[in-house]
Amino acid sequence: MNEIAIQARDVYKVFHKQRGHLPWERSDGHSGRQQAVALDRVSFEVRVAEIFGVLGPNGSGKSTLVRVIATLLLPDGGTVTVFGHDVVREAIAVQRLINRVSVEASFFKKLSPMENLIYGARLYGLSAAESRTRIIEILTRLGVERWAIDQPVERMSRGMQQKVAIARALLTRPALLLLDEPTTGLDPRSKREVHTLVRELRDLNSTTILLTTHDMLEAESLCERIAIMDAGRIVALDTPEALRGTVALHQGHPPTLEDVFLELTGKLLTADGK
Amino acid sequence: MISSAAQQLRASYAFVERNTNLIKRYWSWEVVWLSYSIANSLSVSYIGLGLERIGGLQVDGRRLVLYLVVGTLVWHYLSMIFYWLTDIIGLERWEGTIEYTLMAPIRRLTHMAGQTIFAVVYSLLFTGVILAVSVMLFEIDLASANLAGAALVMLSGSLSFIGVGIVGSTLPLLFPERGSQMTHVIIAALLLVSGVYYPVEVLPGILQRLAIVSPATYVLRGVRAALLDGASLPTLWPEIWPALLMGLVAIPAGLHAFGLAERYAKRAGKLARSG
Ligand SMILES: Nc1ncnc2c1ncn2[C@@H]1O[C@H](COP(=O)(O)OP(=O)(O)OP(=O)(O)O)[C@@H](O)[C@H]1O
Ligand SMILES: [Mg+2]
Image 1 (cartoon, helix red, strand yellow):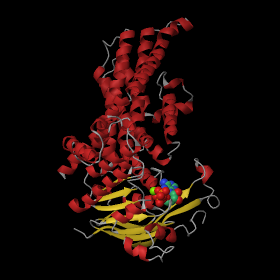
Image 2: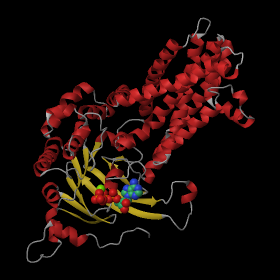
Image 3: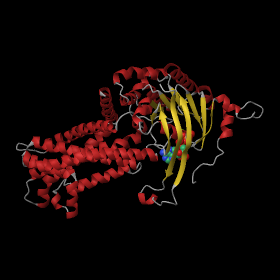
Image 4: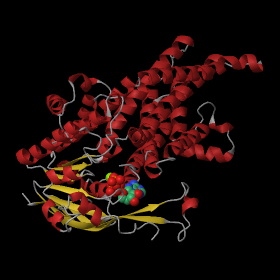
């Protein structure tokens, strides 16, 4: 297999903020169109079976990057390949290899976790019968109680829903797992369970993991390499130790990843209204 | 190749099963909707019996009732297919699952096929209930009707509305906030020009010209000819082929348009905004 799981080259993505809903309200060509550069020539590689972290302030482009890799957004420039498949030209080949967990757990709220997950499994060509046992296995492993599996998702707490979202992604055994703030809203114990699971996936199944997070400790303990983004750009990319080494002693103590984050981000002006 | 086809087939069943689960969970809404539709349908059909009293006219009330029953049933059936298809995006945007469905390794054809199978079965059952109630309340005499002919007309009508529905389903992709409302405009226009409750000949010239491009015009005329006059197949053919043709054009055209709309949505970031 290819040694490189994700290869991103000069990925560029800009969003146009429209003013009105109707064509004539927004077609004022020159004056009113605002644009936001969400990804500004982003290049990086993720190796197979690597746990790769992406940090950055709100609005720095992390989720946009994840969506481009997940074939949910088309880049305006540059290329991304996943295990050698181009995300634009070979979308279905890429889709077979990936799954994603996003911040908001998105489910049919009136359906149960079981029904939601079987729906998900069928979309990936898995049969209901083989999925059912695995769903119970994964959900139990994540600490979702048995009674909750057949209740509407809307009755579960946010953290519980997030666990179901993680289960949905694991169910299809993706070679590349995209985790966009997967542990936001989870209690400390549940966070640790997710961390253990992520490591296990990598160790036992050689799953490649790209993870965005606002939790510096999580990034530091899980990720082999971390990219720090700011205003759509990657401003640093290295191992956690090396990143800490780039910042001088901080008020007498060795710098933490948070010090590095604060040092490197938030200084660039946003591209809004450029 | 075979396993891939099997996989796509299995995936299209995902939509049937999911929608079935959804209507089970939202069953109280289904009951409300069904009651509303029955009341709506009956109140239109009673106009047939009422007309004699209102105008003191010499009309054949029975024939008029059947004319209106056909109109309301055919319209319920066709518009329901239309709405299930145009809602393919809206439904999931509302639930928030749209990104998960669109990042699954399935062809849009598979996706549409699943939704279409469900739409047709659901609309048949739903309309069937209204039909049963209508038959109970009005003495409908179908002894001389050409039932097979009517079924054939309905089949071509289903195809054409599947096509129109797929074309309409691009609107919610293109216009996240207003797309669903726009589909109501399409259905309202079709209701006006297709002669659901009156012959299109009573319409002003310009609307009559629009009636020509509405598949529902042919379906309604064909089903009425078959049920009211027992028209034979050769007589029905002029009503069958235009709807059939519109379906055969609109389905591939709609799928193509949907593909383009999806690309646009993925380029402009219209699928989901949060997260
Ligand atoms: N669908 C969209 N339409 C318009 N603008 C968008 C869209 N998605 C993202 N943006 C803009 O792109 C920029 C990057 O957003 P993105 O969601 O990628 O940030 P993020 O790093 O994930 O932030 P957070 O930490 O808050 O999740 C922001 O300016 C945002 O407003
Ligand atoms: Mg984000």
